[in-house]
Length: 380
Image 1 (cartoon, helix red, strand yellow):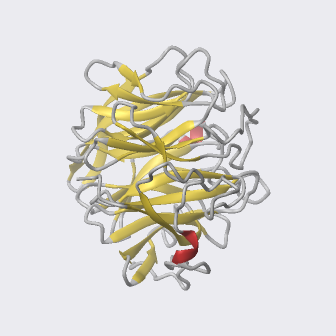
Image 2 (tube, one colour):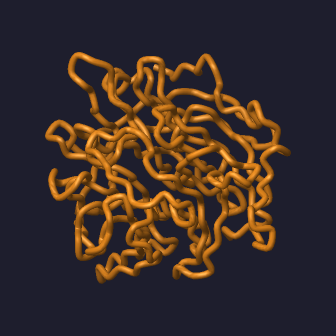
Image 3 (cartoon, one colour):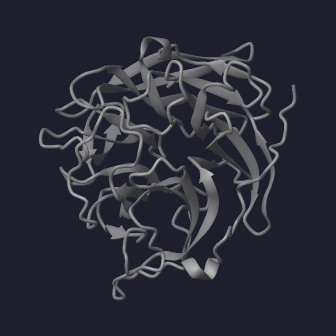
């Protein structure tokens, strides 16, 4: 069955607010910035990622039935968005499950997604974007770009296991993700990092040769953010240090051969997460609560809102040359949105544009996407 185009298109460049009204101007006029402008890109949506060729964007968005589904749309930043369609709304096994957090295979033919089962018996479905560990369970699926086929890659969700943040290696033969293996040990439970080869037999994908990593001293929560450009390492975040507060994390690089880790940020109590490496591998943009004054936050297992204010920062691959990119939480900035948690979701292939998701702190309202344009490409 062919996918049906969505009735309404929410991805409209420049919705409601003109581009000129959101040009980035740091609060400190003496601080140079690599950001040229920030413009609204999409309302009431979630994680969005450019395809390898840059001609499509995949994103998740809640539907009328309360479940988040996977969409794709053709992206021409000069002309707007066209040919939007839902890939999973018509799939009988998935249309009443949450589908989201997509990542593209380098071929552009497939998307890996996490499929969650956070259904409250006898009531409305819980939100897709919960604090890690709050959902009842989730699994990895692979969806073909044409929307005609999909495959279940793991079988953890029915037993309460949870996966999140899948990413393909740049040459496409491996998949890495974070996986919850047990409850307890804190709000998030106990997690590991998994990596497996993905192969196709008679055009049916399967995972094989799964490896498990448990870096760091604390070994509680991990989140994966993609392979390094040489595919020899993985960028991740988590509560790895003995002094880490549960609402605070740091960014690390894991060397896959040796298992060694390098700590790239040094904040025990601040939230440093959602690290996105530029296409050339030399720079990393990540979400951080530093310099905002939010302090430590006590979390609850069923917390369903963004709980920490955060803006985007950039550093080089060794954790140096740090500078702040956005000021969404700065009351003196023209980009001020109120208490907001911002995370980068995708670089374009040239490394001169970013998609960023802004989530209102303390609210169940879906987030909004913003397009961040840099003064010059740093991704090639």
